[in-house]
Image (cartoon, rainbow, N blue to C red; front, side):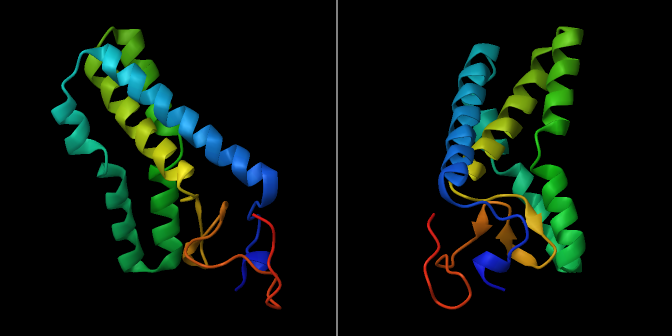
Length: 141
């Protein structure tokens, strides 16, 4: 499957904007984490924790994509952060911000939500492959 055949893969300026949006999310989450007063050891320990969801690929591409996507959308960390704020508890807020920082960093580097075609097929394009139209003609990033 080429980049052009990847359903919903974004290219061009929208792709750049989504990556910049990821960078903004990561920066905001890191600055927010700093404000929680939690130690940077916790941040270092957990920043890659969402990538444990890749273990779902051991069961195949469809369950892998489902588990990876569940761990790499902002919905769960936003809910946990909101709950922490509502309860006045810094730890859930800090955990949510670490999770959001991870998602933002992934988006910045082009690791998008996965399609069932395989790990490398994301909404931000194909990971690790030059972008072409399937006939060898480059497609603008």
